Image 1: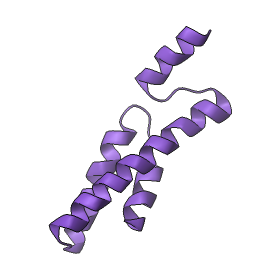
Image 2 (image 1 turned 135 degrees about the vertical axis):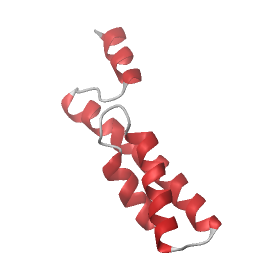
Image 3 (image 1 turned 90 degrees about the vertical axis):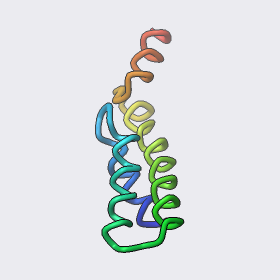
Length: 78
């Protein structure tokens, strides 16, 4: 799960596809390592949760929206 968290956090910074891509990357890395099904699912879920946090960092620190839903939030607040 630690590997999935790190992969998800890094992949979450990719604009527009970070959250979805993070779970796929973590799943396929665990699949490549030959882990069991529970490890694959746990890695994908922790990667999704970590990406959800890392997506908010550019918005909170720099005011840059990297997800479409954040663009809507910025338009409402301006």
